[in-house]
Amino acid sequence: MRNRILNLIFTLFLLSIGIANFPVQAQQPQTDSIIYLPLIYNGIALPPPDAASQRITLPDGFRIRIFANNLTGRPRFMAIGPDGHLYVSLMSGGQVVRLPDHNQDGLADAVEIIASGISSPHGLEFYNGYLYIASGDRVQRMQGPNPSGNFASLQLVTDNIPPPTGHSSRTIHFGPDGKMYISAGSTCNICVETDPRPATIMRFNPDGSIPADNPFATDSDVRKRPVYAWGLRNSVDFLWSPNGNLWANHNGSDGLGDDLPSEEIVIPVQGNRSHGWPYCYTPGVGVVSANEVRDTRLALPSGFTCDDAVAAIFTAPAHSAPLGMEIAKPGNFPAEYNNDLYVAYHGSWNTTETNIRDCKVERVKLENGLPIGSETFATGWLEQDKSCSSPSTYGRPADVIFGVNGEMFISDDKGMRVYRVVYIGQ
Ligand SMILES: [Ca+2]
Ligand SMILES: [Ca+2]
Ligand SMILES: [Ca+2]
Image 1 (cartoon, rainbow, N blue to C red):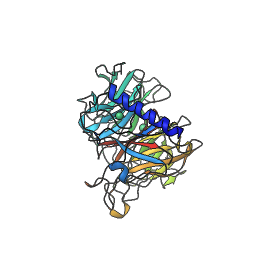
Image 2 (cartoon, rainbow, N blue to C red):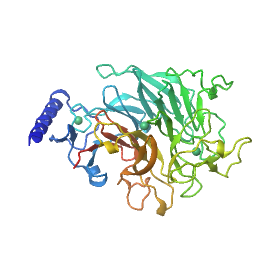
Image 3 (cartoon, protein in one colour):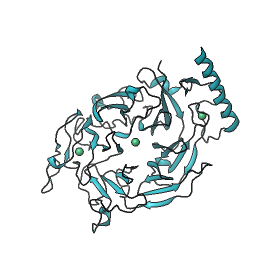
Image 4 (tube, protein in one colour):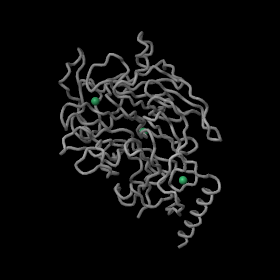
């Protein structure tokens, strides 16, 4: 009873500051314009049931709600600002927006445009007083946010990344070494690239200059100087593992049927090494400890065998389409769910009906800092017997990130929403 009273007091407090200090400034309406009292569980708010909670299923004790609705321009990657707010790239809308929840009721208060007129913004990361934005053919940054929440104007960091031919998403993260890493996918399904930069992870100093210890730092071809690791057909996301290793995912090629090649979910990336594509891929599904095998559609270059490629250590069925991923941060999820890897699977669009890959959030369990298996965490966007790109599909997860209170956010670039997942334990 005491807890219930405290919850009620806390709720009324949140509601009062929401009304008093933060009038609604949303450019698109939220799902609910009525005022309500959110339920509070262990200090975290749960809005009322909605369209998402009616169809998306989660493990026991978890709840999902729509955090922001009717976003325009394909919400893709997300970042948490130093202000604790959620920032999202709207890839086809050319914008980066902020979705603050000042009154902490579990619903975004507004869609605030932070930057616009950017060609295919995708990767976002806050670093050293700047918001970095990786887009089609460049990386830009803006100083901010200042205490008023404002940013300075965009400045170019580098345009020494490939033009957005073929795979156009660009992802940015800063490593524990203070360097700026950018992934760029291939220009084609399977081919030998002429530009050295597609299908790689590149490495820069935070100001866009080339680190002296890059593998090709002084190459006569200036395009090659940022290249750090290659043979990565489309590593839409990457991160640093609990043991400090660079892990990337990778979307495998099409044209080998429903089951080949497996999607490489965890590739322990090594600098100055090939990771296989377009010549080789990791065999098997799940935990893997095997060398890569040949994709016989292309002849091997002289002096290179698939044993020379760095293989993935965890894979998923072909056409799962892994996009954004993050390791859970403590704060809201139960201990057993913390420190596992959560991956947005965009799902299949071109498999046969019997092998449709779900658009979902997958939980890859880690033990001693290594993957040991995976299970579905959030599912239900798919319509039965329809592919994830079908018009009737409810949505497709594009990124997963954890907020300052340990809650999960999921972006959806088909349903044009951001969801919020919390654990309430009942
Ligand atoms: Ca709110
Ligand atoms: Ca590979
Ligand atoms: Ca991520």
